Image 1 (cartoon, rainbow, N blue to C red):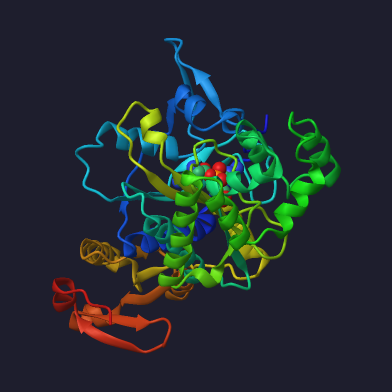
Image 2: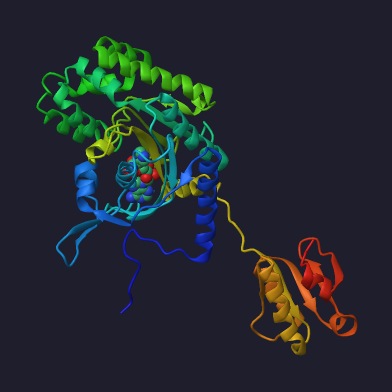
Length: 431
Ligand code: HAM
């Protein structure tokens, strides 16, 4: 019986892994250059962690199982609840600000589609501690730095930014009651993915639909400017004014970080996860209809919900699948080659033991080195060296027998030189 890869899961052959590693190198590099430290968490957690913290939508998408002791676990569908759990457990001991990143593998039992699979890697970068909009701006600056690093600019991607409490205040002026805002957000989050008639039907089912009709909300979402929403929030009371001020600060800081050119205000970005309390954002391709490349926002109450002290946080998650898919569509995906520093060739089978000895010296010096398993002609070994992407070929032949020397050939420039065996083994430099 032939067993296939499970639906929505991927095999990573070495060609695929080189691409993954290219992406991971950028993710890691951008995180480190922005002062973030790496962390990890378990691949599965108690199901309750997601049940209580992420909201119904995510829980309906978890792969869960019961262990022999009858406890319910879930393979992580996202990282933020684990991060909040870890921070809550050591909240008083951790120096602030907590700037952490991770590159976890995760699973969601969703329908596999373009840019969304059942297993994926998701880069997370979060700042916990400060409530200042500076932190919100810095995590958005991290997203933009990555996009730029892989060659994506303002013509390709828009980082669409909103603020849940500013949006809530604006919606309330349209007639959405305070206790209806979460339900309204739940639908607005899907507005771009839902056919118009389905959205209208779902909106009309909301208990407050008579106070705020679907046309009013659609019109408002399409037209309301940042200034108008800030005004509405500021007029809605003390808290609204404070939130409007925070959001204004965020735009100022985005300017200061030099990333505002990639960002636009968008009232439709409200995010599906339950824990966001302030700014929310998503990076969207400008063409091609692919879903969000990343999403994030501020969550100030999550550690408190986990019975820890309140540690405000803000961050984002970015999936490998949509990013690679988008770069592929734009024909901007690199194809990282196989690489070796050197391939050791024996021109005479009698010299094979010396070849292995040299391989050992070079590997011990940290060089990436390989050789042929078959004792074949020099030509075939050179061919293998090229196929393996070797930068140099080191040939053990008559020069070694006659003068104790090896030949080093640069396979890119074609130049070659000879070097004394003992000197080379003592200090193996290839260039
Ligand atoms: P999320 O919007 O559920 O947020 O996911 C963030 C990103 O993860 C998406 O924009 C997408 O790039 C990627 N992603 C999600 N689901 C899939 C999938 N099935 N296949 C491939 N990629 C996927 C969160 O997960 C939040 N915890 C992010 C966050 C971190 N908020 C604050 N800190």
